[in-house]
Image 1 (tube, rainbow, N blue to C red):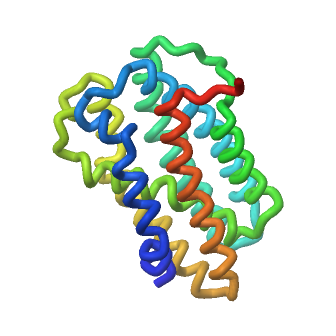
Image 2: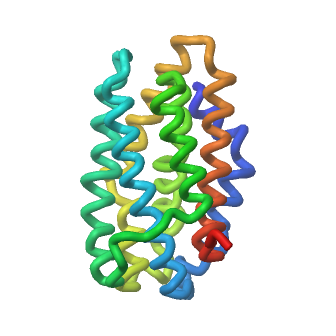
Length: 212
């Protein structure tokens, strides 16, 4: 299965992602709130841009296009946005913020694939985000931060049954699409690039990346 093979190929990125200082400090409820607030602001930008990509992909001529659009909508717009809105309000964040360089680079990459790449490329690049975050939910389900009023709520998003089921369906779709065409190498490249961006996204938040 492609999803299993690519997971083996990207094991080094998965390990780096799950052991990132940003996550380690969240799990111990020691991450400075200002860094978490910065992350939420940038992630809200990411989610808004992904909703744009969803609409484009849903219109593609693929038997999987409509289903993918529905899954992304469930993950990004309904489940995650609803919960993060509560976090955002609690943090009293500004609604209008500028994209950090890494946020802009990552979302630009995904949106470009949605508009100009093949459906297979776009799908492969979208999978790492929900897959890696579902792993966060599995690994940190019983960490000290679960009782934290903010970090506990954030971690709960990724340990939910809904998140696991949506991710399972996306991986199932990935395997079906990869098995029906000769684009596996191209898809693997897109998947790997997105994994790298996920790590960079944590780097960006942890360092509160700016333009200067």
